[in-house]
Length: 218
Image 1 (cartoon, one colour):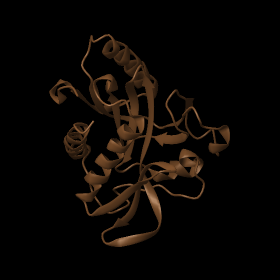
Image 2 (cartoon, helix red, strand yellow):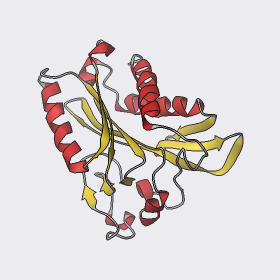
Image 3 (cartoon, rainbow, N blue to C red):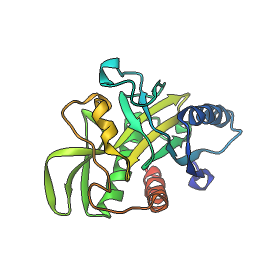
Image 4 (tube, rainbow, N blue to C red):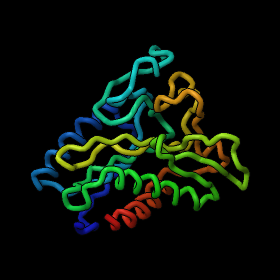
């Protein structure tokens, strides 16, 4: 395991286009692979866009004319990004840790679950559905869990990139135009919908601390 102090933190408060973030990540991964650059956690937000991972199908987009649709090289299916959603991109070298993708995804999931617990929100991950699902909030149990965080990764030479999207206060109507993550029967939620006002900087700081601590386990 490498020194966690060597992980750089990048925080972008302005919206970054998805294409710009892709260019940056690809370049950063090349630098990390050559030991030219530190590993990086990048906190940011995107403009309105539907992105499709390597296992997505066009049937998951119900209306392709609402906003831009972009096919990407991350894993997963179709999801929405936009203002009010916080993105965390993980550019980390698993050559210096345990080469276990499932374990790494579990660390991301459990980090968000621990974060949500601080706000009296119970959430969990499911083996057959990657992501983070809210099951209980303010002591009220949902009839059916709702998704609050999506995960899609790509690994190149055991260096990770892409990552997590977390709904703080996005316009949830955009999820009506897709089968989010390929699932027809589930809804998405946000901190705002759950009655919690959350500043993105509060999320950035708390999630960073939780994630880095859990990353020490691999």
